[in-house]
Image (cartoon, rainbow, N blue to C red; front, side, top):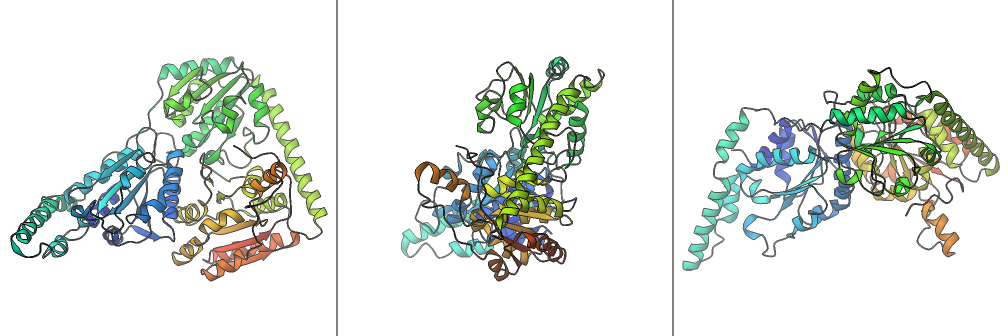
Length: 595
């Protein structure tokens, strides 16, 4: 006999899901067992939030849906922050949450809460299974909803009595009626209720045995040709254009069969010839040394530009609510969300479409009319020269700090430069932290498309463990580098245990400055008190060893390169490793806190 867990697993398999992330619970065990039986990889983590973070990262890296399964009540509530992060990152995640038995809903059962109300504002849709036969179609509906329009998370609540085998559920309900006529009536009702739950399940199971293909996945909307022509006309007239490519442009980039995979998108950006800034998950799209990519002085470039192309980038706090863009500049915005194109700075030309497909179409239109104008060459060189000067300034700061340290910790810039030198060409970087990770964003160069994963606009600390283990699961041959601030490491350090148990040898580097430095720097100056921002020089490397990984302690500058080389060797041999680096003080990012 087929149980509900197997039906869910079959449906996920039809949609190309190969891995799901979970923290076990009796409410959802049949899904895990069914998935394993179908050949899906089940990775059990140490915190429900990590399961959703891992599903989020999987969606970004594969261009499909990421799947997490958590138990009822606390399992669902523990996952909410990660679900909200996926929503704001526009990441297509399907979260299955267990629930109490259908007849006990609202009667005070263990872990029975109103989960749908809690998740309603955090997901695109909430779905509830009410009969076993509905489960395959519910999975189809959830996947389609997660991927369509503006992608995002979907929550599917599955009561426990829809997941286990019918004979076991009948046994649970049998004899619950008690004695007398009242007991007889209750028993009759419960029997009828179980009949209703399982009616038609054999037909669904038989249909599933035929291994029908999953429904066609929704494609991101293509731009209107007239909008592309208008954008091309504005672009040809521009003298100082700037292109910003955001994470939304990368939503389907992991799909080699999609309408705008990463390679094609990169070719389109290069063909346009516009100086380009890459943000969030778009970092790495053009490789580490692309002449077109600009990495520094974005504010100045936007103020001087006469045309700004926003490809999946809203005018939110990251662009100072649109005020970074000069008043006289024309703005062309391509976005899946109509709301984001009108937020704070209304676009002069708003293209409601997939930004990746828009850039591909725009490159074809511009290329068909002679390619990018030669007059942009001076503008590109101006921005490139600023980049060179800034890189030289950073290198000088790192050298001066190292010389002045006298062995009192490692300069963060020097550490990040060493990491950049050590990384392999196939490296995937996971960024989880405040001051240290933001410093790394100036120095560490992603090697290729989807080679940089950060939480996104929500700025959530704690994504590191889940993101890193998912990255290694998706790209087992690649080096996965997890850059942790010592504060953020505390959220998911336990996932080193998950990495060790499941053979996911990531390299984690903890920038250990014994504090929440990004907050402390401003708090102490403005309020005169460091309360709540001070940590200890915790032995994170020793904790990693306790979890089955390897640990390396670095206290001096001259130890860094050898430690990173050793970490690469350990990871190549199959062990996750934590490099705990004691940092010295730094004012590199003074005044950079965002509100």
